[in-house]
Length: 298
Length: 229
Image (cartoon, each protein chain N blue to C red):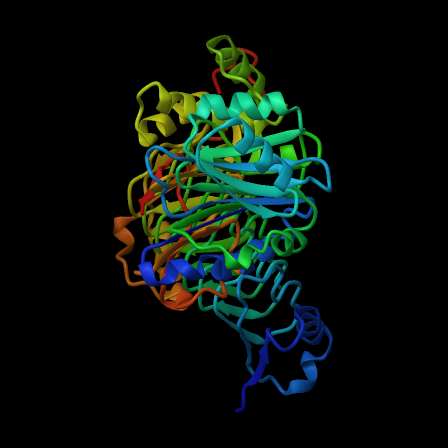
């Protein structure tokens, strides 16, 4: 199964309530995805010179302060670190290549979950309500969020296999369904220097679409390419710095429902994750058509 | 006559369905309203008494599935599999219906005022389906018996591998499936369309509809077909 969730806030006053509105959506999809959950939230954009890194430590008692000390001993530049247990968001003006190289050299079993100027990413194995509590999702603020509850079908249950997947900067994707050609997509991308971190099928879709955008496609053109190249069953929800996009495969085997008001656009695999939203009874509620693009801009 | 009301935020759905299955004969034929369905799965499934049930909101998967005799109205949208395997009675959706509406339904009438998603009436076995809006691709796939009246348009592969079911479409058909063909409307067809439109409460003119039925070429193995089906 798996549950997908998307929420884009149109009314600026509601952006501080993003987490409160989203958590019941996530918990509503617990039965569709009881083994892992995660989300990418797009917050205020940092300066062009800066980057945010969402980090995950596979060790339980990671000493983030030591990482901060080591960073400051090495580089004479700004750094800000917000920690949430074994995950943290680090903001710095160090160039992305140098930052990633340095993190690698530290050999701390730290994983970079996302990079960008607006994206923060949290994902972990466990039940969705536990994960929502663990990372205090209720307090999240921002313009839009892409979230997922996972029922593993094609690869292992680990934090790395949880969704969202990311590629490049400020780009993430969640998926309900299964792709039949992830390995042929990998074989196409790997010779171009694109590195995969897991054997998960969703990662192939994520890296494929981001590669198209790196190659100059708009999000819409990349999604059109996706219809040609991605084989299998999918409902995909994609987040970029200023957009939220929803697509389903030609057979629309995997569900999605959209509720749109003047204040927000909310997407979930099933209506029960939307039922609590304010004014949902007067919202425009519809099911996205197969192989059509639905793109909303912040 | 008073109405009996259950609020699904107060009473567990399992208890409500139990009441509808076992205790409904004691309530003197009162209509039953279900409040705050909020997309729950399996609301009013397996009913087998001539009762009236109103679901006031959106329902999830398999709403009113396996219905027998009951008259269920859903005042909202429904998820996959509404009225799946219905035997008799009437299921009326005021909004849109997701995939596989009326799948394998043997009898009774399913009315959907809005659009339906893909595979509406798949493997239909004798029920009547009237759709006010459009139907998605692969609708009436392998439909064996029964009638469908589609007031809007049909998607790809309408009526693929039909058996004896007959479809009437008012709007455009994106494509017909294997072995489905458009046939002339007879007087009997106009009467069927009128009867079903009247039952469903739609006022379109029967002469606006075209008939789609099986060309019956798939009934017999044709060794010369060379994979051309």
